[in-house]
Length: 308
Image (tube, rainbow, N blue to C red; front, side, top):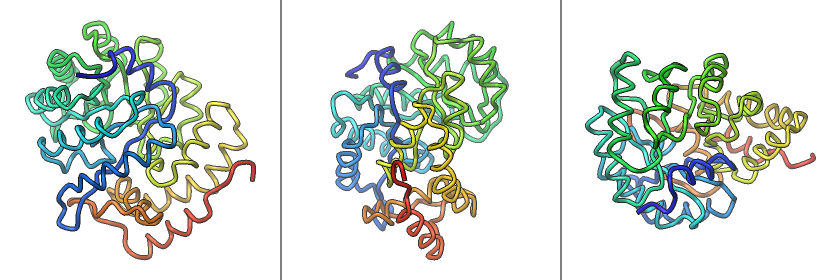
């Protein structure tokens, strides 16, 4: 049974930085549950207000449904009592419904509905997809707008009216006009989450639109810096935010942009760089090469301090 009502989970998520932990694999690519649990315990010491287990950074797309349930169960059992755990759902509607029910069994506190697998779909089809998932669970549902599931403002407004347990909208597109239109139509009915590959680059302008939180992949390996960056954003300390962007975030993005799929691979490389390895990524992703790992390690060694 979840520990938070949909409204309570949404309120908690909106109040701070969100953790999207990697999923630990052994060298044979099997799920390393012991290492994963240990890492969840370590990350819990840095103050994130929500944990998204087996999300995009956690390689949801490469996990079997049974593995997803195992990862979510482990996260639920390891997080502090005041941190909601959000489970993933995705692929076709039938599979997404099964994953929603698995999230209930695992004791998750909410659901992140990722884009359907492969096919493009009209807005009416996306509406039916979200409706079916929301109807399959009492958990609060957050829809993730990106790739082949980009929701219009009218679609989001309709879903917010028809699905009481739809509690959040995560943006992975970066279209400020679209976000403005959604916020104008829906207002405070939903919690808004920044969800671009390196959400820190959009954090300050999005805050002005009421997007109070975002998913931080770099929280995995530089958690203190990630929290410091988030605090600077919330305080609207533009000078500090710009310095952090210039000295760390943008150089990090330069490494990330060297190859498709590195938005996930670079996070596992960061874990290796700080001495907390999480194993390799699964195909079709590839790990950073040795020279890129060296570049990232040197960048992490120069992570900006507060007030420097």
